[in-house]
Length: 100
Image 1 (cartoon, one colour):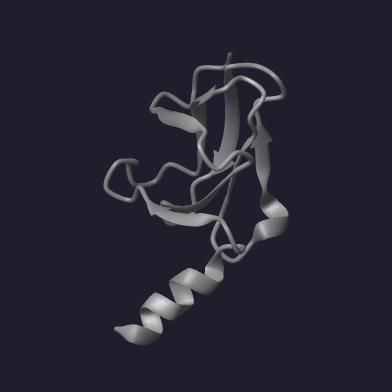
Image 2 (cartoon, helix red, strand yellow):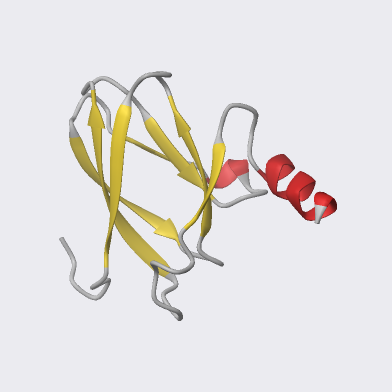
């Protein structure tokens, strides 16, 4: 169990945290659109697959709300934020076949 915990911690960059949304994302979904809201608006939110920091998706470029497309993989993600006290929410759009 300790080895699994260490591997999960090392999968994300220092300062980022691992979130497990496997139970919230339907199986078989390859790519998901996330609606991300940040406060304050100038904060930056980033998300990437554990172990692949080069696949980072950033948002929100001085916007309070943005939509980003992320490969789902196994449903676990690393989340980073630019401000330590910032607040964010991320919602998955469950209809990936609808283009915005």
